[in-house]
Image (cartoon, each protein chain N blue to C red):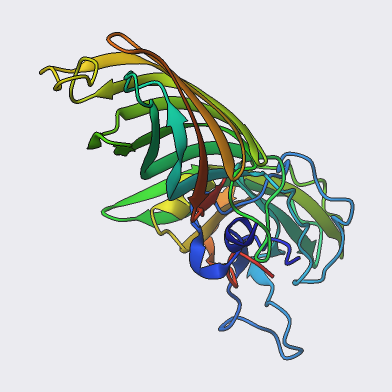
Length: 143
Length: 203
């Protein structure tokens, strides 16, 4: 019996890795962020955000979304933005961020790539957006 | 049974990739939220599958009732049938599993001819039945229409003969009973052989 395989979204970090081969931290002023897709399902995807700081850093996430090109239009699936706890000195925090969208409908329409966009504000000052390319991994219906 | 087993053969079963994603609660953080392993991914649950069964086949067997003569009312009926059925399962079948719905509702449509001793052959009724099958057991009920009417005794009358049909089966044996408007009760015992195929896709 061959169990089923399921598609999963992953961050395509092929072109953005650190010297150790890990996905690179994206820095905006005093705050650095990495993203990991931990859950993929019919309801969308769940992402772990790793947020770190070098000094005291009043950072907030102002917006996050997954942008999926779907034929002639671009679907924006807004994420449930988490609150960043106070970052004092050299800190490391993990946050959970679900992104709801109809994954089955987009899969049936052939959408296999997307972009994760995240906007930070440091002490109220907007920072350039951070983007990560997303791709779908799927080996076929059965393992 | 050989034909039933064939339903699991790769060439007779097609797995559609629609609705490929699994089921998972994306609002609940995973137990390993703080893992920095880029490859860690919590697997989703199986959403189950839809199964569409397509079974063309043929049948043949003896019966009685259509022709009422003093000499004999025995006949042999043979024909072809197409059976379509739909079912769901809570788990995905897998590459080597049967894709055909074992318990399902469906429809059967068939047509053939009857050979009557001393009276040649006539067209058998076209029938349309609703079917409920449970593995190799089945029960069907529907309508049957003979393209010609009347009792065969000194010639056939024109027109159509409408009636009801019930079929009880324990594959490959079927007991087929009809009540026709012009000729009354009929009873046929047939052997029915099918080549089942299936299309499955995720819920």
